[in-house]
Amino acid sequence: MKNLKYFTLLLVIVTIFSSCKKDDVEDTDNTVDPVIPFTIKIDNEEVVEGTTLVKTYTVVGEDGQLSFNITNKLDESINLKSTVVSIVGDGTDMQLCFETCSSNIVAGTTEIKTINSGVTTTNAATHIYNAQVGNRNFECTVKINQVDDNDVDIVDGKELMFTYKYVAP
Image (cartoon, rainbow, N blue to C red):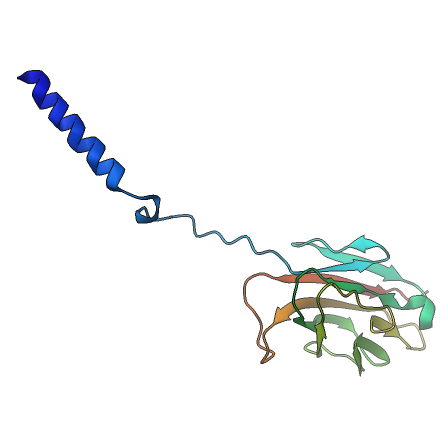
């Protein structure tokens, strides 16, 4: 009789656990591991998520131009936005080009660009150009992130940042 009670109890436990599907169990790990759908390379050095790549120049004009290439890794077109998130110094005579160019950049300057599947931008289309004359140090940090069709940020950590730094000789 005692064995029958244990057997019945065991049968009830097995039935309960076997009827519980994996989908019925609440997943308590809410961590999102976003995959950034694009890459940025500056001088063949890839910008790494969570870091800010800093490039320092001591010349102006084309020799002091920071060119960056962006590659769309998806099988569909994506919209990307470049934003100047911070500036140290005077952005007069500085230019941020993200297909179209903004001159005399300030914090908050933005440009939006659509990149087709598998396409890599050219240096002529995506760069920071320094045309300033004189001995003014300058630094700006640029963030590139994905936006939707209405140019609204997709807030899920899909962004990369780099800093252009000019040190006057």
